[in-house]
Each structure stands twice: as C-alpha cells, then as structure tokens.
Length: 211
Image 1 (tube, rainbow, N blue to C red):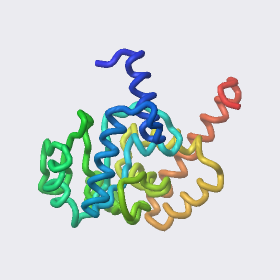
Image 2 (image 1 turned 120 degrees about the horizontal axis):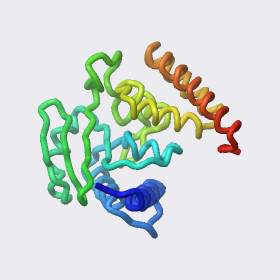
Image 3 (image 1 turned 90 degrees about the horizontal axis):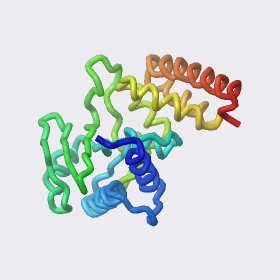
Image 4 (image 1 turned 180 degrees about the vertical axis):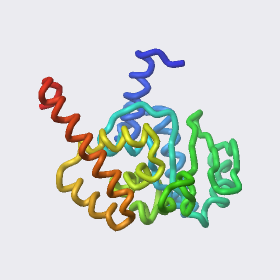
C-alpha cells in the first residue's frame, strides 16, 4: 500500500508520462512507449481512456492502470502479438476484456462493440470513433466522456465533473452536441454533471480555492 508521499510521487510520474515529459520516465512512460510501438508496427489503433485520459484532459489524479479501447477485429490479434513486445497476457477473455501487463503496469483492454455495463444504452465506440485512427493515443474528450457516461461508476462521474471544471465553455458545447447525437441518456447525465461541476466551481470561488 502506497503511503501519501509515495502516492504523490507516483502521481507526479504518471502525469509526466501522460504529458510526454521524458525527463521523468516512469513505468507508465515505458508501458505507453511499448503500446505505441506495438500499435504502429502491427497496425492496431489503441484509444487510451480511463484515468490516464482523465489526466490528459485536465484532471490530475492517481491511477494504477492503462485502459485501451481496441477495435473488435483486432482483439485476438492484440492478445497474440503482445508477448513479442514484452507484454504479458494475464487473462484472455472470450469477449475481449483481456488483461495484460507491461513494466508491472496493468493494461485493461476495452472491447469495441461491447456494453460497458449491462444497462448501458449503447455499446463501446471503437478507436476511430474516439478520434484515434493509428498508433496509441488519447481518446478525444467528447469520446472519452461517452465511455465514462456509459460505465457511469462513482469514479467515472467524479472524473467527468473534474474534467468539465477544467474545460473551456466552447469545448463543453461541442461535447454536449456530440452526446446529444449518441443518446439522450448520455446527454441527461452530462447535464447533471455539468450542473454539479458549476456548483463546485462556485463553492471554490467563494472559499478562495479557485482564481
């Protein structure tokens, strides 16, 4: 179990990896570089979602793993070629929810076309729909929010609220437009979290916690 100081160091290194700061290379940076090499050489686009994408989009929080959305046709190929790049296959799931590991970092595969939860109104979009056509890259903010609003766990809601607080109004309008085209439920969830984010920002201003 990491104590508070170790957790802060780990967060700093994780954020540095996401932001491409080579001066603070960490296990996350090495794992991301390995995924990038595999993706490029094998022609398998990987859309990074989850906590790392939250950091990329403005919410610097601790995370222990890497979540990647993979095209349905590439799921078996990925599991087959991963060991060639030093990536361990911990669990090959028949539905594509593979568990991998690189540099000690868990890698969770999120399969395109599957439901993020049983009651989700839509299936998981593929890398192309998330803005990643080649290589390993971060899902665009609207697509990332779609994945979060689909799984909609407590952590997902917290991530969305914090990223909303860091986003510009024009970006939020574009996100809202996209979500409205995906499903009304996602639009409703986004509006609820947008209201929560505005309330939090107002409280922070009143308490001097935000400029």
